[in-house]
Length: 169
Image 1: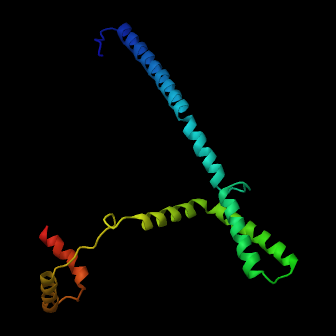
Image 2: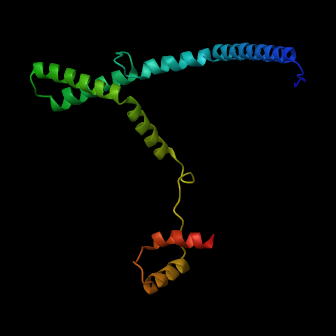
Image 3: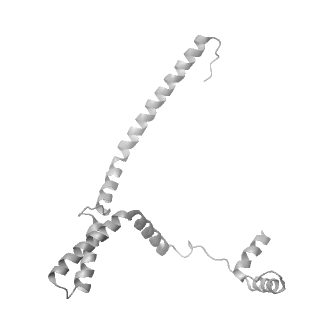
């Protein structure tokens, strides 16, 4: 809403009105933000619980920590250290558990990203995967003739296929 400003008093009144409008907008925005935080609190609690359960940050109760301890113990005690002395069977898995837990704690985001990428690759449907364009027999023949008659270095048909598509466009 524009008001016509003719005097200094009009300017000061307009400035006060705009400052008041900014303050009201700030209060409204703060209230909306607080309402949104209250609405999202149950989801935040679920995510926090899942994070504490799954993330291995030295927490003995995390699923990742339990899985690592079980796996390391099973591999070392039952296979590699099967015939070792009782002291070796006690000390080596303890040290290995600490080393593996520290590694996972330091590289947790990298491990998570690699795992997610691997799962995405394995679960993509055939129609979702990027497909290589198929070259017809006529295109292959024309590209072969072009390669044979060209004075420049020879390229494979797949490398030349990109040039053909560019020329057609």
